[in-house]
Length: 381
Image: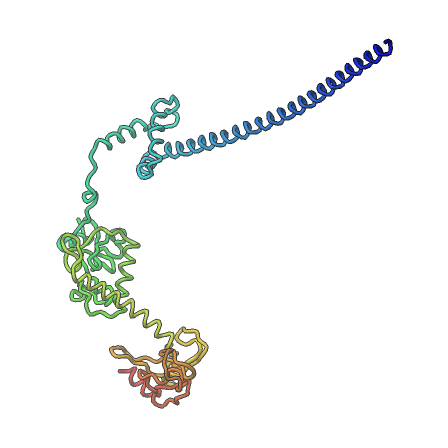
């Protein structure tokens, strides 16, 4: 009996021991879980703090960028309000800023320190401009159209309102150069009229001081174009002369359009001449009483740098004065680079617009064209 009670007591003690051990394990596990939860919570809190910091930085960037933009645009507005308003009218996103800046200046106590002393006057003028209807564009400027009688008054004589001259129907104020165009000037005959033709012909009598430029050479038309460019550069353009080049309403006449065609043709021809000189460079030429006239070719004659010398030949084209040209005498043709017949191999010597000088060998690079006695007789004539 005593042994039975003893075994039961031992069983109860072992049960209690097991209960205590389970409690200790539970408490230990709960403590570890709580610790891990605390660590996780701390990590989450740190992440949240970082996100908040990032958000604040982003907000600061936006805020300072916006503030910088407003400061810059307000500075531009304060510097030139009219220009800013004009630009804002074209670029609509800026339009609200104009209203904002106007309100700022209306209520700002510092505006008097930012504006100059004429601010009130400028504001009044601005309001007056807004209330005044704008003039039509065609009335804002009307080009002056002179008649021949009106232009004659501007001849620089006593009592004259100034010194004007016309060039191809365009009127220029040359009053700043009375030493040239005044009554005592060397070109005073150009004042008060259009004498375009005389600018290139040098014919300064009454028959030559005219505005008709028909029948001039291509070089003369290029000269006229250079003269009109010079007057636009150095003097003030003031209007047009009604007559040969322009109508009373300022519109161009058929003659003016014809002039443009002449000038364009002259420029194209000048380019063709330049291209021609590269194919047929001009010869070097000299003359003296002892040796007569001599022409010769080099690799630089005519100012054209090249790899061949060439031989002197007469070059002629219909309607043009013949001249001496250095002609390539071997290899492929320069004048007809795409010629199908490549059997010649004599450069451009076969060109039909070339002639051999008399008493000159066909392969000579230097030729004497006249003896001294003949040349001296010609010079006396």
